[in-house]
Length: 151
Image (cartoon, rainbow, N blue to C red; front, side, top):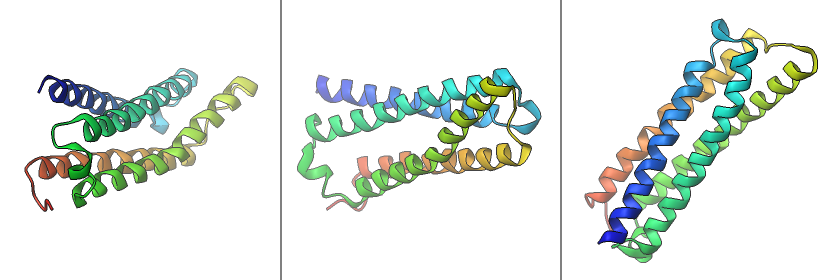
């Protein structure tokens, strides 16, 4: 039971960290706030967001392997597949903002250029899509934990 509790705790901490940093990206990535410091900060925040996402994935998989219900139970549940699918979709969407942040930082370092307003708006929209999709994952998790649609 201690293992299950520690795995759940690690997973929750990773999820909360991910939510904090996707929220930070959404707050920072605004055309009206864009300056050199924000461009650099977005690049750093995105790295932490990526590390948090990896931690969410790792702790989630750890829970399916070493958790009380076990691998066989979890991987036969449709809601787990929904959670993983949503997570993958969020990860794929996050590629565009990550590449933009890298490009913006390189342009800033090379010639002091800030990103165009239209590009900032496009990237912010993708960040907001990610943030909203991320919020559906805990819903699937709660339903899964309560045995909804369990096989």
